[in-house]
Image (cartoon, rainbow, N blue to C red):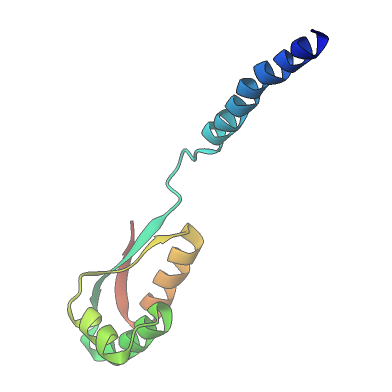
Length: 103
């Protein structure tokens, strides 16, 4: 009979332990936006080749795909990026002659 009583507290403690990770997950939810999207707004036509090269380097696209993307601006370049990475990408594209935005 004592063994049956010893098992009871273990079963009762299990639901409490399961609730703790849920509370921790709620605490970790960010208040501010953490994932950003980089959009190519427009580019300086005289620097088109430099922008196409930069888009290729940053996105891993082939030359035809990168050229088509640049020519169809405004266009989404990359989404779900960290703020630091998005800002770095925008800086590189602006240096090449493109106008970009981070959303």
